[in-house]
Image 1 (cartoon, rainbow, N blue to C red):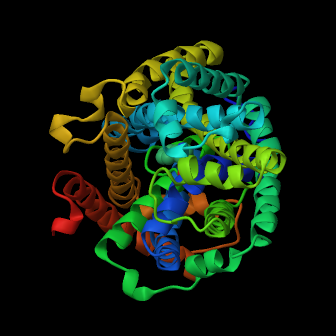
Image 2 (cartoon, rainbow, N blue to C red):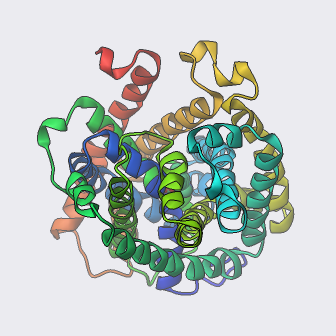
Length: 459
Ligand code: TRP
């Protein structure tokens, strides 16, 4: 595949880029706090089941579609299933725009925290709770840090698949693992670290409630970045010689490892300062800075700075993939030059993200949406995205089963692989894509709606 669309230069380049898409704020920010709220190990257990049962097959399906059609999300669905199905790809492109719009806001906070800890005086604060609230409502800082983040993302994507997306991931993904492992080694040596590990790793199965299953399912799907055609787009840059079945396994494992290891880094830190592991979303922004503060000015700056740098790397490898999806659409379908497509999209996405940015208290109505049980606009957008992704993923399975046909998917998958129809893995993928994944995803979209408008605990 040496066409002008671009392609990954090697299997490693592809795997790192796809793992980079998957590894993100979701792994380091959302996974640990969900695990903290849902009884630690019990949550991990549920999460792993869904990665295996749902996410892995969906990822294989997306990659197969992309590589078979060699086009962006819209182009791939239209090519394999006609124009009507193309709209499913377009729906994914829109979902990507929406995900990036709020994701970039949170990435901006992470970037701001990194700069303020490593080079500023954030750790001298006394009350990190109020600091966080002031921070996310400081429009000047927020504005510029998210502009900066979007600019870096756009610069990488504008350089193209090989020189931009692949090159950036080849540097950042190994750096991310090194940072993560170093932080784990450090946090495990702290006093009381083992109670954190125990909380995290010894499952208390009585903790498993419908909320745990729901959170695990939703988190697993979001974490692998499925349902909107990221893997279709990345799959379209992969050569026919690559083995998609094993690559998807490596990508899923790499992503799960980072989520798992983040917990292993964070809980010993939290327990070493006798703090609560179940703080929810503020865990990373309110609890951890206090931990770094307690370490003293120099060590705190160093460990805290490394932690937030890690968070920025993870976020950046994901924002790159999120921007690549609509970019590929404009480049392939509208024949717009990559640079123009990227910068134009960045501007639009940034504007779409403004309500999320202003929703943390600055504009009271956005902070307290009357039609959304008083939740803020960022939560609303993020929930809407989750629903769009689950619907997108569910319809993708329907597309493979009824339109494109499982046999065509397999034909694509068998290229570059020695796996054939009689192998267990192939049977497993066919079965899950046909029955398990669409049902789970339909179930999940309904649960998200119920959770948001009624509350699962009221069931
Ligand atoms: N998976 C990333 C995370 O866990 C976010 C992400 C990147 C994503 N690309 C995506 C989410 C596509 C949904 C769809 O943070």
